[in-house]
Image 1: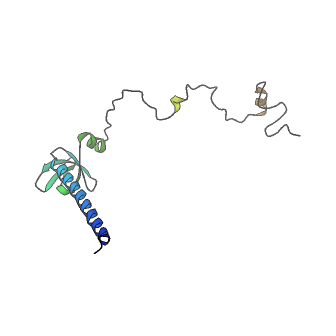
Image 2 (image 1 turned 120 degrees about the vertical axis):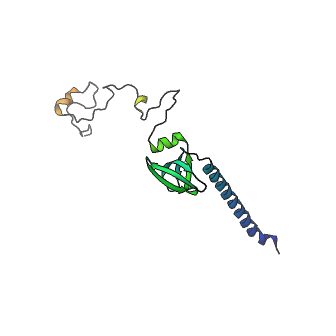
Amino acid sequence: MNPLTLLPLIVLIGAMFLMTRSAKKKQAAAAAMRDEMQPGTGVRTIGGMYATVKELHDDTVLLEVAPGVHAVYAKNAIGAVLDDAEYNRIVHGDEPELDVDGAIVPDDASSLTGPDTDDAKTDLVKKTDSDEGDEDAAGSKAEGKRDGETDSK
């Protein structure tokens, strides 16, 4: 038999081996995560519900969904064990304290343009006939001309 005909079979077996190996690693990591649960820990279920662990049993866990509301879940239904800061941020809306050593960057670019002056603002008001005489000597409008008129003849 030609070794070249066995190559696709060998590649297929190798790919299956790598996939099962990574799946076993993920399962072991999930089991270790579930083993580190303790009463008082914040968790997220695989359905997306956030709760606090009240009691641990062999295959089940008692979760407090809301104050005074308890539910029994299988340990396999726990999707993630959350640290206290993340749980409080998600459930209670607590904002974490930020340690800022440097300058604070503003949300907009207003501080980058310099101080606001009335001279720098663009005048978006249409000028009337009485305002046309207010143009400076070099003015943008020549005398006797109105908007839209040109020097061409």
